[in-house]
Length: 471
View 1 (cartoon, rainbow, N blue to C red):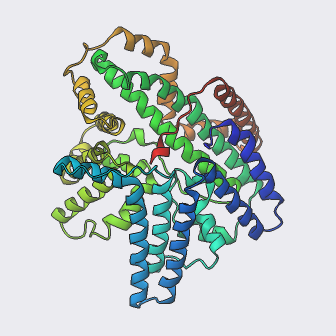
View 2 (view 1 turned 90 degrees about the horizontal axis):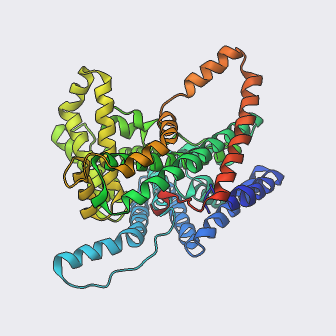
């Protein structure tokens, strides 16, 4: 079940809200929300919900042992057990087939390739439970005594499937002490509507335009056709994923939770470094805090720092999928992060910012080629086309037709990538210095119109994929 589906919008979610707010106290509300979250997950994964609960049990028990035997060998053993079991489950279900395929390719052994289906959201909830055990061991958070509350933390349906990746420490207090205010609930509705609009009205449209080109015969693609199709995919993946994050943050607010931001206008970045401060913030901060810094970060000299960057970005690519294209995508960014760390950022700081933005956009679009094509031959074919090698001319009639027929959409998508919210708020404040009544009226009207348009779009279209489900 996805947030941008009619069954969620007009079935599961209204029932969920009614049951939650009818619950008499926070303890019962937590139980209701936990049960509903497990049902939400079981809708798409009726078998693997057992794996989710097992993962929660493992880290809840290990958290208790870490806290009970703090400073003793049993505490370290419990932490090690948490790391081994969590990463073992992730490796088994996500990477075992990939590993065996590569062993067979190198050795010719012909070992049977495991055929596990990938449990939805395993990359997200595994990192969440693992970070809890590590933070308890480090003393960064107190151990959770209630398994119900811990399972709620792990299974919360707003962010269960695709993040943001929650740290237990960030919502520990909210599990046992929170309340939903009218202002917070209203803000949650607006944020959810914004995310729904991103997903349904921009990501879905961009994907429907990009997929026929990218999945079609590349021999007919021109240079501009290659760049244009990847630009459309860039719109799709950004508005798809950031839209989901917006919906998750909005849903959280309706239930009294405050989740951290996961995106900060990544397409205005001036460098790879800047891009990864703005894109999938919860993932990059996870690798920073639990891999990069423990490896030594930038404290042990430049050679060690560069090694650490390579390790982190190899793992970042691998996290996204058991395929060489994702590994190359991660290493692609590692190379440019290293170049920027050594000299390129200094150069970018000295030249007009427009050149930095052009460099950043070009880098991001090339990166999405690696990300999109799991078939490396098609990946490098597209890269060649974008730079004039094997392209069907500089431009072509089909690309021109698609571009001009969808020019208003392209303009809207570009504008939606820009931080225009501050300008809108400034305009509202100029119209109404107190902003209260005007803000409220605009929010209600905005939400109703957007929900109506999104519903009409969903009713009239069968194209509604969610890209990050496979991660």
